[in-house]
Length: 365
Image 1 (cartoon, rainbow, N blue to C red):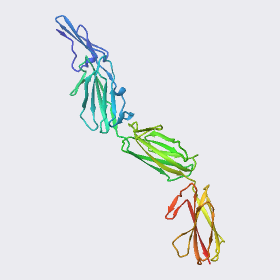
Image 2: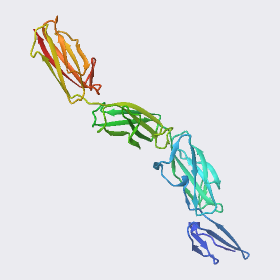
Image 3: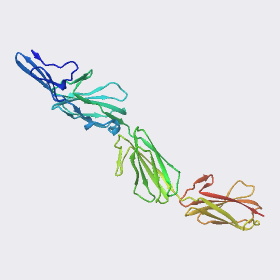
């Protein structure tokens, strides 16, 4: 009996033997022949080995975007080459585990349907392939295969909420406003930024989805007014749990941001200049700088008092008159506040808000 066998350590799919029983090289992954001469009868056993396999339709690492949300229907698709009758076996390694789980034993189907588990994280899939005629060229304690691959697949949770802040708190047109976002509930958040100008119903895309949680908004060319800022967030492995004509998101947040013209300073004067006798009518005047539509509020503090009195509430005129009849002599303090009509005021206290202010002491004799 003449038996052609492989030497210890030889790879079965690298050799064949001829009629003399000699080992000859062959093309990797093509065929293996055991030639056995028994009673002058030739028994030829040919096995074909698979040598390339790609699950999910392609080999791709975890950071390339292969993943889905918990509970999603996932289709694992394999494709082997080099063997006419491939059989496939599917294994799964959960995140944090060292124990491979058999998802489905060898079969002719190259497709396995899986509902993503509730545990988020990076799962490792191992898909084995061997030809129907092959016992497998490699063996482990779990079984045999001709070829395998083990890519990762991420199971993620959607973003549950998103917070938004902007700095500075308000700005004039032309300034750069930094809008920052933070998402909760998702391990791989992506953010998209939209703007809605005052009086408009059309949202403008400020910055498309990306991993950056900040958007630097150059407000040059934008009009003053209250803008709506909408920040969308979704996990990188989420298609979005909500869809509109503008796109998809897991969570979103809208905030209002004002572009304002701010008064940088304001002057204050009283007429007659210097001082006046009690009972006189005084004219208090003001002039603001750097604001196109200044509004003024005038105040007076009587001598010995800690309570400011309103001479005139905010209005467009830069002057106010005060009849001092019945007022006692003494040093009065006048104050003026100025803010642009588009500004809510850059500074606030218990009495109100302003962009700029000024004080002046004035004696009544």
